Amino acid sequence: MIDAAVARRIRLVAFDVDGVLTDAGVYVGVAGDRPVELKRFDVQDSIGIYLLRLMGFKVALVSGRVSQATTIRAAELHIDDVFQDNQAAKLPAFEDLLARQGVSAEETAFVGDDLPDIPVLERVGLPVTVHNAVAEVRAIARYTTAARGGHGAVREFTEALLRARGEWDQAVDRYLAERGARRAAGEGARTRSPRRTRRETVE
Image (tube, rainbow, N blue to C red; front, side, top):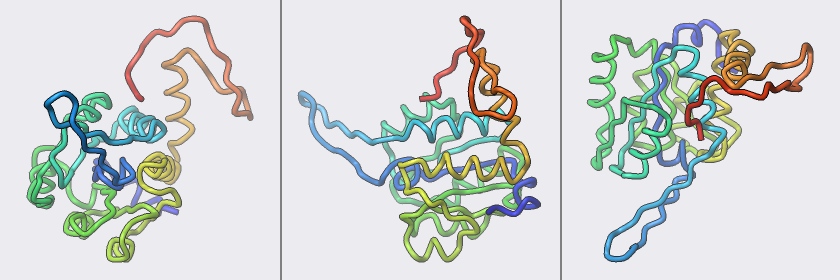
């Protein structure tokens, strides 16, 4: 469980990519005469990120690997702050992000899974990791998901954060209202209208 006082301070949520948004697998091959890299992303995670943005959080990706797949996925999710460095020097990029966004480290949550994430995890107010993280990262984290990276861990964390802030129901209601739906009182059922007034990619 995330401490409510800590959760209410958070204004920026940043994620590692490989091992957090993905299962850490990278598929490498050749299409024609061009190298191709593919990654698997979880659709439920994308809705979690959308809910964060819907509730006013700033969202960023900080990756230790330059990847076109990450760039494409970030664009789909409307994440503008994307930092990729093949040397996995994440802390300088993170410090630059804080300065540009006018957010303190204490107002930031970061989700990581491996050794390159430790410098950032040690700085933030809410260090988070996933079930498959290495022991050194798990020792630092204040919240660890039950789900593995790339298998709903981001969605699990975003729900836990919003619930700790008392904002989960509001986030769900806003999401459904955008899609012409609502929750029935006291139930999880949804009543749909025939028209949608707004559409945005969340998968």
